Length: 395
Ligand code: PLP
Image (cartoon, rainbow, N blue to C red):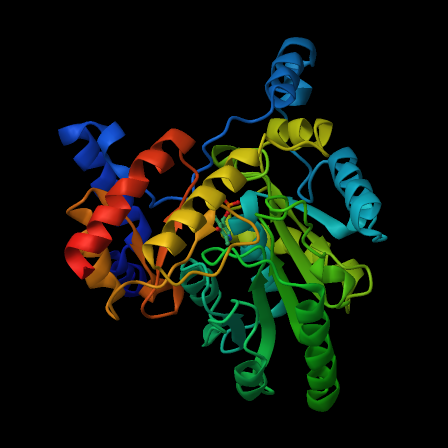
């Protein structure tokens, strides 16, 4: 007998992937240049030349048996140390290599973090709008996801709703900042208040509540700002990172979990991740990817195009009359749709070859997401089309 749970999931395919497949098919018919594909969060800028040089150098000069050998199950020690040192330098933390666990991107990081601090039947709380893959990430562990409604004024945290949702059943809180899809960057005030509430509830319930902080967009912050480091504010934090966006390496599947050294059982968590890997078949990211990112640890791709695109779109959308919160980072913008039914809105936009993602799967009705990790030239060409769509359909 095949597994009914996974079979049932076949009916719930990702809306984002379906729209992206539609955009590709439409591109084959009319030329992809003519499709304003704002569906997928795939970086549009190349990785830094230093990354490419590093990989070539490794392949040409390293001893192949050693280079391509199995990574130790908790990751390559020198790489773990390099990551710890970089985080300590940048955020004033005191990690050692023992707190760092290399993973296959943020998805792999979250798979380990969630399993280490929850058990089947526990609750994980997250905040709308949220990355839709959190549903399978959490349900795959046997825990369940509770979604706190959005604060649509600024897409920070709706604290009243959060405090009402928290309870003795809550094992972990999952945040994502800078946020996909809203582009919000949680402020220091937001992170402090979140931490205060969690500390008070831990004391009240007599058990840990872990903060799992999903940070693949950490370096994509606009206006010269920085994302305050969530783990600085709350000891029981597991920081999940990925180089998918900052180095434009989503296909390399490389990231990590960093365990706050003051977390409960901090010294056990990374070895426990190693045990979790045995069951999930994760078995470490590739050795070459680990070694290569460590050599360019403080570099990023040229991320400036995302800010250029954001400003163009934000100005255009507001002048067309959209209600939109200006993103503080990422490569997403999350305007209010021009009718209550976001899916209907996005279906109508398809007639103009504007591929927009409706917000229902992000846990907020009535909005849509645009992933503007595309050429600036295409963003510019899409603006008159957006104008025409809004005028002709919603006049
Ligand atoms: N978390 C968020 C918020 C994301 O947007 C993504 C990818 O788009 C991921 C996690 C997964 O990232 P990765 O490719 O590093 O597994």
